[in-house]
Amino acid sequence: MCLWLVDTMGGIIRAICKCGFESDKIFAGSGFRNFQTVCAAPAICLNCRRLLIKDYMKKQEKCPDCGREVTFYTDPSLQAQMNESKKPEDIFSWHLSDGMGDFQLPNTQYLCPKCGKMTLTFILIGNWD
Image 1 (tube, rainbow, N blue to C red):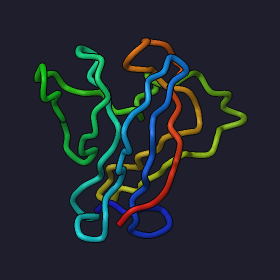
Image 2: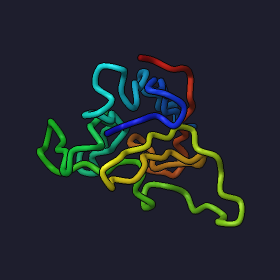
Image 3: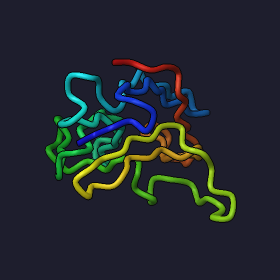
Image 4: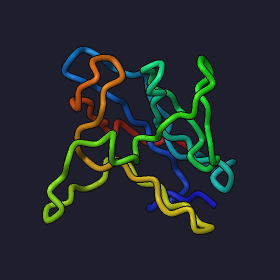
């Protein structure tokens, strides 16, 4: 089961990098109709260097172009090192039941699919249902 920490509304986020990369709107989480079965989340194909939106609740999501497994932005290798004593607030969080944990995007910098540097940020721009 997929529940947003506040209610069953998903979040609209955008990825932006200093190099000029900017994603379209990312409708993260899920809405009222599918919150128990879907958790849409940003991921990257490290082979194609492409930002994708995939279902975090599926075990092994694949890139539609090359067929390789994608890496979700919850992976610490895609995140800039954070000071553990000053853990940043999350830009977006989604609680998953059934022992799957949470999908969390901390307020930090991430690997940019365009320039390959840890200069990508996610910003919350709204909610959806």
